[in-house]
Length: 288
Image (cartoon, rainbow, N blue to C red; front, side, top):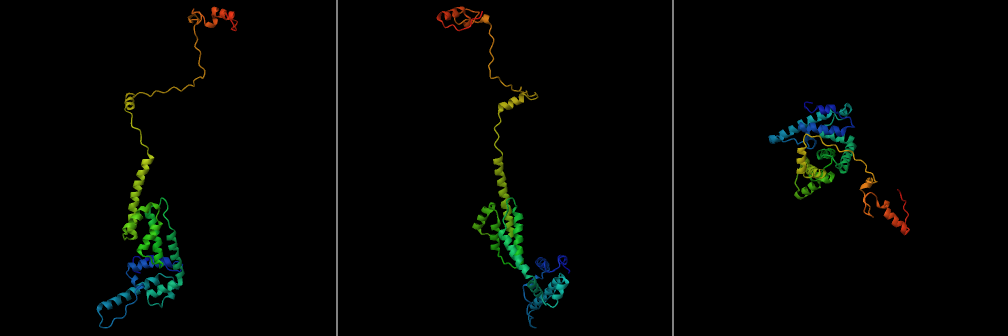
């Protein structure tokens, strides 16, 4: 094998169970070497003696590519499979026979890929690029194993897997109906995601950060005056007594409310007590 990619086949020889992976790698090598057309195009008929030169060139090109493709296929098989395919004359015959032998794997792989794609949904927080790579892998697996999905259907299937964050993008696409490949779609979805994330983060910032009150110029001025001084420490608040303390009064300065003389209270006034005694309402203890 002269191709620089042929090492892929030498490291992944066909044993039977790995048919799908092996076929995918074989197509990579044959496409690189421009030999894959012999798997889909029949051998041109042998031209007449007086036919144009281009007919002879086309036949020679097909024969050479067919021989190269068969060499790649046989060289990347196990010894048992090589023995079984020695008599085949074209690369297409070998592939068809392998499909019959391991075709159930192909059908199952195609079914699993389509099922995985239909159930695939973008998870919250997953970047669109990561999600699109997963979706494209399902599509490639399905097509490699025989599924025929046109471009328009592929886009519809992709949109069904996206989260609600891309509903606006899908609505815009439905209006414009722009044709694009999956790679182009992924780029536009990434651009939309960046815009959406930018506006979303700005909105979150507006909600998360409350507006701070306007600075008070007086407080700022007072703060400047007290610069360099230690802040005053407030004394611990003491619990106020619920009972009010009675203030002591000097008896000599007291004026009686009854007789108007200084030096005693009304309750100690002799005239007041004498009056009460005469009325018979005297129930106050008299103290000298």
